[in-house]
Image 1 (cartoon, rainbow, N blue to C red):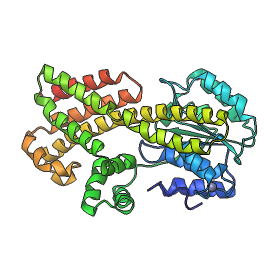
Image 2 (image 1 turned 90 degrees about the horizontal axis):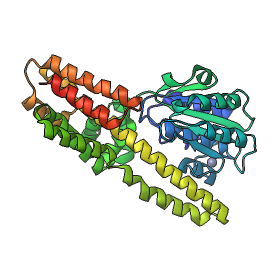
Image 3 (image 1 turned 90 degrees about the vertical axis):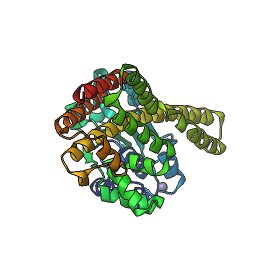
Image 4 (image 1 turned 180 degrees about the vertical axis):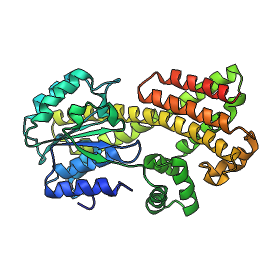
Length: 373
Ligand SMILES: [Zn+2]
């Protein structure tokens, strides 16, 4: 079972709880809750592999591998289409849940963004959640637990994930990816507890460029004219969308490998459908991540300016930009920079509740400019 959770870093409590559950017998429903980018989805897939694997979660057999890739017929991954998980989807699950698993030891349903049930879907789901068939497990994953219906949340065992400590992130980057110590420390600081963002900063040129573009935008925004602000908004939104195409080749390659093993035409068709769903899901995830990165980088920049203006250079996040921060900082600007950070936090809050993204970011730009006028 040791191999199952090796990709999860800095979540000893959660991993301990899940490991014990696999050893001693798992509950029927779990709620994985915690901030974005700390490994909840990866842990859900690993835990599902543990439930499905004939060896109790070896991490290396065909079952474990297929579950982790999201290509196992007994492990269903459900994500919202548009803003909601809809009732039709749940009705289908209620119907299928009663049948025995095809080949695995258990049937597992993983709900991503599990706070997105609309009310009809939630009510339909409650019925199955109250009396699930013996072979069924549900894993609900969310970073907005406050939006879940209490009747649903109270029927799940809570598994809490925390922001990953900077030290743990730096060690992860050095140990796993061979990043040099100083660089790993810088990235860990910049990522602010978000492990998956840290790993991307360490491995992807696109993500590093995206950060540079966003930092430049944050720096130049206060002085930008009306037209420049519009262009900046286009650039910011382009940075959010820039990565959506990235996932396609990788998932297509995965599908190709899976098809080589697939027997009949029906299995092939099923795999293709699964793969399409996965592309949609990953693109949705990248878009959400893009928006989170945007607000994270903007908030970090103005927070750094507030720190520099207060003489607290040591606490700056964007260490690699310190001299630039010192050049553009306005003496006595602490209050204005704090207001700018608040404007970003407000946008972040609106984006969490599915407000039109361009609108929310445009409003954020205006508020920042007002604060720093
Ligand atoms: Zn296994």
